[in-house]
Image (cartoon, rainbow, N blue to C red; front, side, top):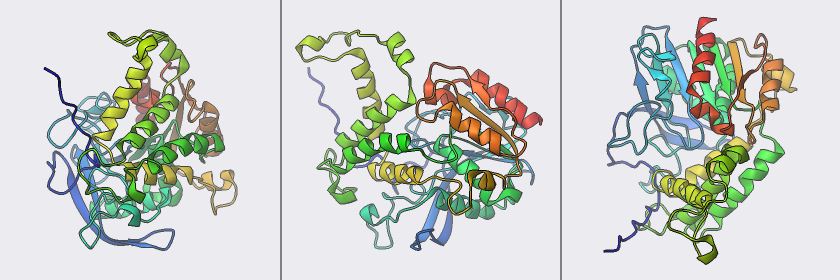
Length: 376
């Protein structure tokens, strides 16, 4: 008996009426963005672990396709397990018996915080009407969110990749509110190479017939831009990992039961297909476009003089770490951050074959780095 393929939803976003899981929500009212547009009825979804004593709040900021589910099992409301479960919890590197850990879903995201899949004031999804946002807008929203939780300052702000961009902006925009800072596998500014890698991802989504100019959210299953989003994920995943890992894990082996000479796939192709299939069921193409554009625009020195002048504003006790095999955000970008942030010291090297994704995978090395951050 043949299995009928399950068509992907038009959007993999969390939407009103879906299981809430461990999410909580804060409504922040209206916010005016850097570009001058106003978002009304802004909502932030978040999760917390531990107890707040007034001084022990730690902000953990997720990457592009991450969300607020930092630690915990997959389950009702959470399609994937926590992305830092190995590091966050009682007795772990980020010890929730000591720290009050807070993780918001980013502005423009798709797991409960206002984004393209969210309802606009007319009740329809924002879609193409969602305004352009910046990393600084994301952080301004997080500052309002912190105010709503009565968190005046953070004992630490931690982030990798896109989360590292936000962590950096936190330390520059609100230096008095950040005591410790951890920047993982992220840059002071997006480079031409990174923008170039993003370009075909954005094109794949926008040129998908299911994109409909960004207004696809209420279409039936199978009629959203899932093909383009899947292609974007395949491209991106190749920047997250390394040739060394691919050659070791897959070489030129065919996928079991398939013959590449007769229309079948190589094992590496099946692997990429798997990651694409997972993403289209849990993420929103509009959020992918919006967040990628914000990352492309990241430049801590924009409007602040030189990078040295901008990074000189940081007063937090800072640790910078990078993966030696990262081909998306190469180690020299973290070396620049470490050299220009006062007191940061030498960059912490993560020796790993896993490239950019080392900040998600290398728990033992990350534990050492976090122990140093919290001990200082």
